[in-house]
Amino acid sequence: MRIAVFGANGPTGRHLTDQALAAGHEVVAVTRRPGSLSPRPGLAVAVADATDPAAVDAAIDGTDAVLSALGTRFSKEPITMYSASATAITEAMTRHGIKRLLAVSSSIADPNWRPTGAHFFNHVLDPLVNRRLGRTLHEDMRRMEAVIRQTDLEWTLVRPSGLFDHPVVTDYHACETSADGVFTARSDLAASMLRELEERKYVRTAMGVITTAVKPNIAKLIWNEGVKKK
Image (cartoon, rainbow, N blue to C red; front, side, top):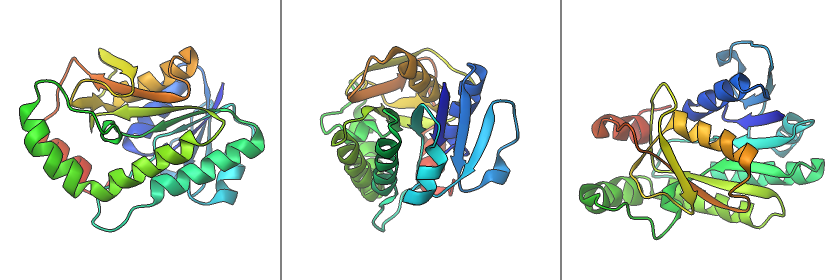
């Protein structure tokens, strides 16, 4: 399958690109910084801003599916990247007749998500980090989800919990809407997306993904995901 990966040079997109190539897919890596991607068999690079309709249209031409691993850091200012890119991508897919879309969102998009037994997270970290520091980011994620839900595409909204780096795929759990857990390794997030691309278990719904085998350092996670420039 020929797959367009948006955010291919980002922390999740790199896992997604590597795993897709290893699985035998052809990958069109869509990025604004092509120099950061090493040439490999099966890999093509398309230079595009994901919010630019014309650039997106050209980037996905000839692909069979689109996977979006776009992300940005927290900001006090309004964020529009998620919803603007979703609009550009879904409209281009409709024009080209490409039906399958998987887009990374967040468990926070589920208003009922509260991990079982995670008292410190639910009562301290979530209100401070996600609902306050990440408020504008998650508001735009919800707008992105709304844009995608309104289309006739065969979409899956992929909702990880707190993202962290881990070098290999581990024992992860996926379920409809959102998963009952606090953390998701990017390697597992990528693996779950490629598995769903093949199995099509969560078409036109949301898929929650959590990592169950390893846990991150919480202080490092907050710094990397919410403060440090990616």
